[in-house]
Image 1 (cartoon, helix red, strand yellow):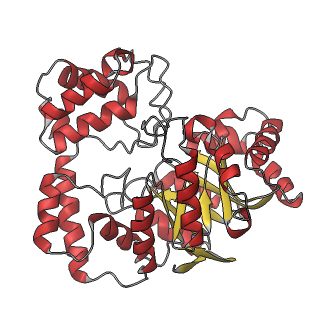
Image 2 (cartoon, one colour):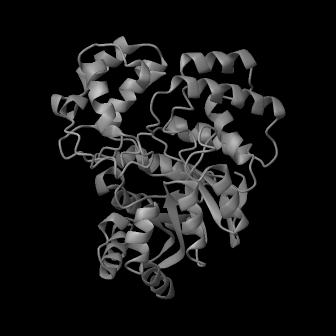
Length: 391
């Protein structure tokens, strides 16, 4: 395992971190509450035994069940081997005491008396001003540090680069941040500019969505054709990960792994990671693949499920996944079959009432209420996609 600098902190963090958002489930539904605890425990401990020392969780992952599971998985001495990170669900905070209450609950779930890295979850401009600043939550976090309940304060982020800089500059005590970053997101959200800005301020930078919800690990046919023609020595997933690790501002990459095979593959990648090792030829390949992806993908959904639950029962990420796969792989027939077979009627896009509650929570700022009727028309009624939606 390779280890990297974590901003100005006196920590050496593993190049690969274990994200707990996509643990294996017994019902095979992504991010279900029904975590396959035996498989997930085996995966986490396998990774830790091979050098992973950063594990990331959140209050709401797997329907609020992930932290309790992780607390059990880190028994038998594994808690002492890792830096444990989890996140404050700021959307549930309406007064200062809520912060303390939630932190106490998370410590109990995780079976620990200290959370090493505590993040304000999914900050954007509205949550920063309307929750963190308004309720003086940083004061509560500092008191939790003084009490030994928190080690370091940071935030995860989904908004514009302008909002990112505002949050970074809004508090002198930030020690790290977590951003979405991959070779398709260099100009989205915090982007490359945000990565470099945070690092220039001495913050450790944690990377999430390095494979964009798995999309970069399994390229569509048109992108795969470019990749195969290049004769690359790496897999598509390894190429995407190495592209990120090549950058000195990156502290650790989180991967939400769902199988032991993914753990093994990512560990192999991490073992060979290094700054400045990405060749000019590999960068040209990434540039060509990026251009093709941008031509193909109709919607930037990463299946993070922050939009869920839908008050009308629509499974928004599943609908998007089927639609995107159908359009990108030019196989709407299979997408429609999946829509019919695997989504119950209540979960389908046709049940969207355009209430827009999901849009306020979507990190990608997708106009979900405008997309759902299109998905219902294409997947449910068998009609061709609108040109303006797939160009």
